[in-house]
Length: 533
Image 1: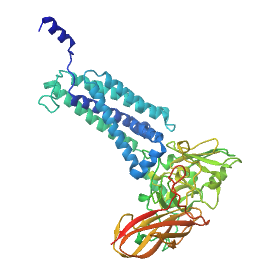
Image 2 (image 1 turned 90 degrees about the vertical axis):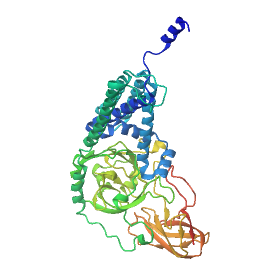
Image 3 (image 1 turned 180 degrees about the horizontal axis):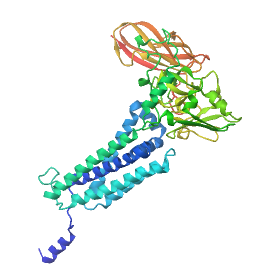
Image 4 (image 1 turned 180 degrees about the vertical axis):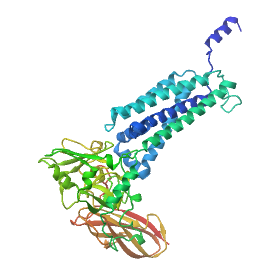
């Protein structure tokens, strides 16, 4: 080989060896961890919802197309938010690894990617209408710490880095040797521990609001209002139906809140404004001085498929909403009660249904003998019987505006759902479960039916394609609540198919037409197949 060729090859070779792949990936992962922890720590002091990780997740929920949202609810149920967070964590981990691998020779590619991720967090926080400008400090801290830690670790790892051809597990193949190797390991461990402590500090800071102490005070007040006794025969829980009242821990929860707002009753207030004669600003103490009512109400989610689980019943305690609105004076022409949550979520309820004295719409502060659980809207939420929750049940409500459907559209309406959504007359078979095997003989088929504000007058079953036959109904507790039913059969061994349908108090019988949840609730007849042996 000639001297000139050798010299030329030497000039083409890099003067600094690239980082081993595992080291480069670790640098990216630790930098992202430090960035998220820093943002979470700052958010704990300015507003927990400003944590970049959560803010990006909230934005993802807002941008999710309705069909995908309904798929997530069907597939994952009430764990859909956990699945989203896990998915986001996986994506961020992959992005961190990519940033590291792209930066084996230079920190520039990783720095650019870190800045892009940081700006995404800034945009997510800035776009949240319920967050103040001060909360941008959280993603700004995340951005600056992420970039700084990435470049710092990259510099430490690059010292005396050697070119390696073998895998990471090869002897001596982890990068910096001797003192520099130990320095990198110590620095990495320090970043990992610091990130963990910062994340924990942010969590503790976010939890400094003592919601449970506030709930305890409200529970004492709520408990002074006796709940109606559930009559014997209201449910057939021993034969497979739910209990008539759903325990708070089992009450379904479907909402857009990635993190549950932590708001004390002492800090809460409600503004009533818009097309009213007098704007109101009410504190929780103001609500506590008003006469409270207890009402048994069934609530249902529009995402519920035929036969689905997202329906529950509770005794709610609160102030009649029509009395609050009467204090403000609803002006002629207003047809929408536009409510806003502390986290920015909005819902629109028809004024006529809200003011209907037979409907018992309320500003609820209690649920089943205690204060509202935090995840169900403490300190206060709306409950308008007979309407799907997305237009009637704003949790953590802080603002009510009287307006028109033409002037304002609530959260789900631009996403393809109807502005008005009365709960549809439906029934569900709870026992036996579909595709189960049962010993031949006498069998009780049992379930629930609901048509809030109308009540259930009849439930019929069709077994194996035969004629419709009436089921025995449980005692009706309230026209706002579900009603249990059951029917006994003597069945021979083999496969059987049973279908249910309900007729409400207006005489309307549940339709057999199969329609999905979008735009205003699913319809169809619940059908199950089981085997007798």
